[in-house]
Amino acid sequence: MKIRIKKSRIVLLTLAVLLVGLPPVFGMLTESAVRNQAETLRNEGRLLVTVEEYDRGWFSSRALLSIAPSPDGDPDRQALIGFVEPMTVVVDFEHGPLSVQSGIFFGFSELHARPALSADGTLLDAPFDFEFHAQSNFGGTLNFAGEVRPFDSAGPGFALSSSGGRFHGTVAGARTQVEVDAETLQLTQGDVTYSLLGVRGAADTERVSRYVMPGVMTLEIDRMAMDREAAEQRTVFDVRALAAEYSTALDDARSRLEGAVKVGLERLRLGSDTEVTNARVETAAERIDVAALAAYLSAAERAAENGLPFADEVEPALMRLLAEGPAITLDTLRFDMNGEALEANAEATVDPASLSGASATDLGDPTLWMRVLDGRAELVVAKTLAEEIAVSIAKAQIGGGVAGDDSMPGQSVDALARAQAGLAIAVLAAQGVLEDTGDAYRTELRLEKGSVAVNGQRLPFFGLQ
Image: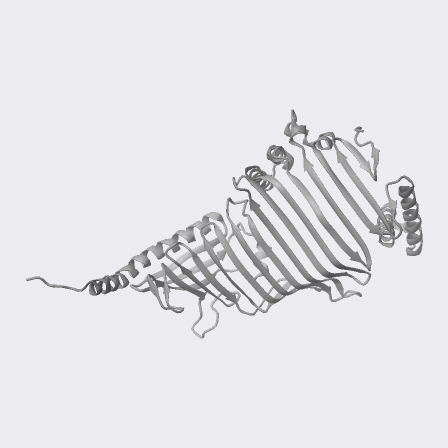
């Protein structure tokens, strides 16, 4: 006797078996991943994560994690966020393939993490309250979102207050996308208060190696300030509408890197005498050898960790970087200081052919750099601003040369500094180093094959013509 079962029923029966049978398998895999990640974080010296308890169920699991600052981490930064003692975190997992913890989700697992609570419902040992959600799909992509709730933290010599913040993003293989934003953050140390208002950041990067992560990162800050309570002039500095963008990309062969940095701000006030407005900086670099860059950064890290001479460690890698003929440009540098404008641009290119026969030990020889570098730079500065800069330099020189009881009255220093500044500008203008364009001074410097020219006049430099 044959029993006929419709295909639709077979499909439904198979799905039912999978939905019931797969969750414990995914639960075991999830537990293994949690324990492996905890071990990785400990080995890397980033955080000391200990799995205190792990209660694995059929469809869900709960873990109790102890998270402590690493002894190899930066103690000042850890103290700044109040993270100076171990804290206990509760993590609830929903096993795939179907989760309904935060709506219907098909994937490997879903988690919800938050600080452990004491019997009366208060935070057990966490410096602040937070929530973290993450979903891992079958393709290995991790989607996450979190929130840090408003908190106050205090310690010896400091007090920190925050309105909290939010973040969300995705990790897919080597690519990471994340966005963060926070409304207010205020740190007080002694009589000094640092304030951050309206902070927003984003990153979309690809991890090629520990040192190379091409992509785009942006940061915006509505206001950043430093105030001294006891000072006569309370505001030390006040920055408004700061925006920065850092972008890098690999070529088709993924062996060379190019990048650009853009920074702008609406206004910067320094004390009561200086105001910078409409500032903008744009720089770019190209033909950066990826392997050589990684070797350079690794060598610099070794030198810092082991107390080795910096130059000895990085020079071989620096030679590799120069051999690719990198180019760096300052496309724009512009700002108004107290209403007076300054503009500049520059570019520099390395000629690899000029490195022929040179070794790493030659990098300290200025004549090598004169042969290797080709470039130009142009500066245009308003006369009033140029004179004020020259006076400031002269005051610093006079102040450094006068000590103890021989100090001069302030009016005498100011008069002497203005006299020296005026003389210096007049000499430079007479020599053609400064070109008088009416309301501004202009200077152009060119460097080609060891020849230096300022405003078209060739000058000797380190014995080269």
